[in-house]
Length: 536
Figure 1 (cartoon, rainbow, N blue to C red):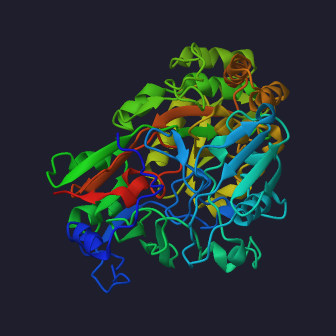
Figure 2: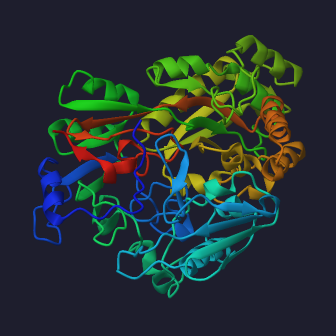
């Protein structure tokens, strides 16, 4: 596997050498023009089709918080195998005071894309602004352990933690922004959100909302000059349109659902990449809902669903059944919580709770029909198929699930009362995904705890897992959480999805990582596009 190259002392290549690299990077006619580079040489443009775009390009509001931003760098980065390595820092942090102090030394000579130098003040500004409650960053809880961050000279940054937090270093892939630009603006509304300045290998050249984002090589980048001089992210929400444009040559690559990726398998000019992921599909079952608030309904749905059939029929085998937020092959996964498809068991649960068969095959209890609406984001065929399959399984148990597609603007205000076909999942330490998914303090905080799940025992275990230092103590806490989701589910976990990408077979050094839910834009074989080299 090829890791992301972090160059510490190697000089930048000459313009002539860079031009030689680019000569082999061919691109088709595309929605984003290539333009020219600073030397006036033609810059070929790689064009990638993705299903969505970020709301903002500011790390202060959460963009790039898990790494892989092409515009920014963090103190650390992750390689192909997600192992931490230095980026803006010269080395991994020095850890002292029993895990409460982390010290980073910054790399010499790093400049932002506007030519201004990076200093420790920029790092301090970035973290303090993210932690400021006035900043609209819903990922703030991920840095809960930080008590203080300070500069010690121009090249040293010291983090002091409230409590030892085992995976803190992984959080320092957070992109660093320039205080001299972002600090002069309101972080919530300023131009920096759409006109970012960073230290990464590329700079944003244009952004047509809902259509495309263009990038070109950053002339001030501290690492090697990329062979791919420019690229475009074409925003194409419809899977079928994305596949059609890829087939026509309008795109060099795209993220595709399994059924459409399969249509390119025999194409000698293209290659399919399959990435394992923590990305799960689940139905949120709000505990405040008239029907979903009954634990018996939630438990019956958990038994009635046929997860393996969803993997086989919807994902064409490109995934795994999900019995919780952690995949079955994760080292923190609790063995023995697998639940088979058990329609008879679902019926027994409902019978025992007083949900009796009623008119139209829909059960009822105290005059309340076992019926609720399940929303999915319009245009997402994979989620739609999951929702329809879920409704079909529920119907067999006597529960009516009415499936509706809608925009997120329509769905978000309904999160506390209506079910949603959600897509979530974070790589790395279990705290990263489970805390924001389940902790009651985050219910209603954007897309955190979408089910408004509230279980005191789970909250306690989440806090133990976050603050614990003993691996066995933390493992026991996460075991308790996963068992609690069996006994008192707030979600019906359905599948963990493999991500599929199809690209023109013209470059070397393409790899995939184990991916989170967020993919297509930041993840995918282009996570290290700055390392791509033309095939010889």
